[in-house]
Amino acid sequence: MKIAYDPTPLHHTHRLLDFPAATADLGFEHLQLTPHPDFATHFRYPKMDRDLIRRFKQAVDAAGVSVPALLPVQRIAWPDEAKRTAAVKNFRRVIEIAVDLDVRTINTEFSGRPESFEDSEESFYRSMDELLPIIEKEGMELNFDPHPDDFVEDGHEAWRVLRGLDSDAVGFVYVAPHTFHYGDCLDTLADELGKRLRAVYISDAYDHRASHGLRYIANPPTTSARVHQHLKVGDGDVDFDALFAALRRTGFLDRPEALIVSNVFAENENNESVSRFQRRRIDDLIREQGGPTV
Image 1 (cartoon, rainbow, N blue to C red):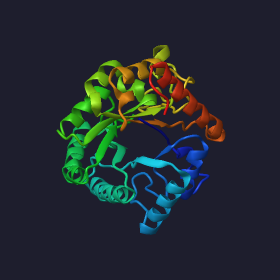
Image 2 (cartoon, rainbow, N blue to C red):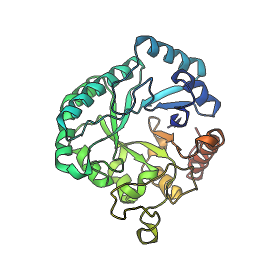
Image 3 (cartoon, rainbow, N blue to C red):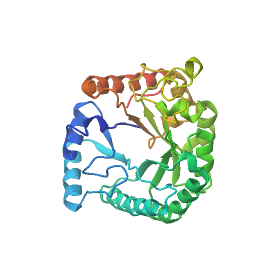
């Protein structure tokens, strides 16, 4: 099992080439590369050329860390065909970059629209018809998080969509702060996913359904906005004891290829102390379930 750092808090203060050293300084041995202008900003064509790829690999080696996964976000399930086509082109380039970086895992989102569920699902499968053969040929894994405000948000329904691809290359990303948008279904979902649960992101969030739906007050009351946070562990309502107990029960904590990612976004001004806290807390949660720290 690997414990990785999500460098999103560094995006506005650090160059891409500074990420590996910063990751090591914060106490992490692994880095999940997320959408950065020099890598692949949300929905846009990736900007890494061969020279930048070479220099990034050198920075990774110099820092003594590894990059187990990339996280691009492209509109591969968008109901508009022009945007979907562009997203597939962009994603092809992400795969090429992953191969050049010797990264075998891509974690991503569906990136469709909830108000156009059927069209988005059709777009998703159309994109997978083009992308999945490449992923399989390269011996890579492609894992999905059903992100709030996507065409599929419920955890079980998202797994049904992925299961429909009938490919061992496809897996699930469980993002702890999305728990309450997934339907708070961890116990049954973890058992159903089994080894197809391949990555878990660790940060906290409030349960937006609490206080009779008034945990947040949004105006107008009919807004369709999905509000959630990525707070440090303990600052929200996610039951991390239950989460790690499920990870232990299903064997996730024993798998060397499994990935845990610390991804707190809400406290950039305290990023150093929060990131160090996150690493210690994740180690504690693993230890409390009888597993070794990493």
